[in-house]
Amino acid sequence: MILTEGKVRIEVPEFQKITSKNKVFYNPEMKMDRDLSSLILSFYKGVVLDGLSATGIRGIRYVKESGLESIFNDINPEAVKLITKNCKMNNVECKIYNKDFNVLDVEAEIVDIDPFGSPSRYLASAFRIVRPKGILCVT
Image 1 (cartoon, rainbow, N blue to C red):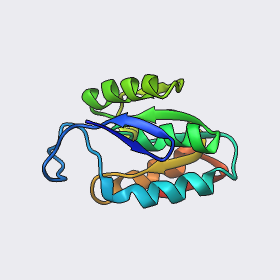
Image 2 (cartoon, helix red, strand yellow):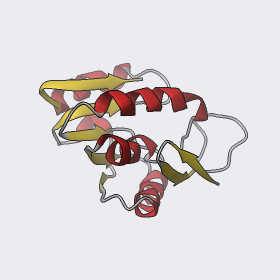
Image 3 (tube, rainbow, N blue to C red):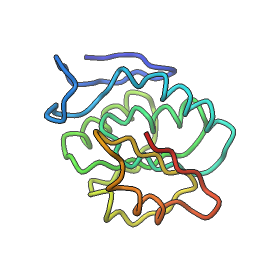
Image 4 (tube, one colour):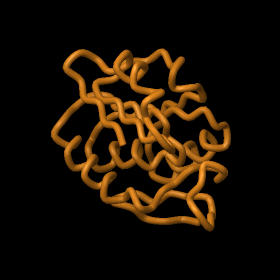
């Protein structure tokens, strides 16, 4: 299904209930969190890593609403296909990795992680990836 959030339109998988078994994860209840993150990050410049991208909604919104350059990453190949499709739908250039976040070898001024469940297993890698004086966004 196609939905609009902020200044972007994205395709998300149809689902009855939010679970980790969904083909690609999307949580509509986190819209306000994404709204606030996009607003706050509009005061910063640089590259943002959407570390657990799923549909790509965060990274795409950061490009369109905050003027940031986004790097996308998701371990799920189905998510990578959907991110690519959603970037094209929004005329957003995308650099996408299909890796486990904990082995990702990139740096960014801003690192955003919004996992399904606890973020604790990603924090050490997030601190490694974020540049000095950078921003870490954890949901």
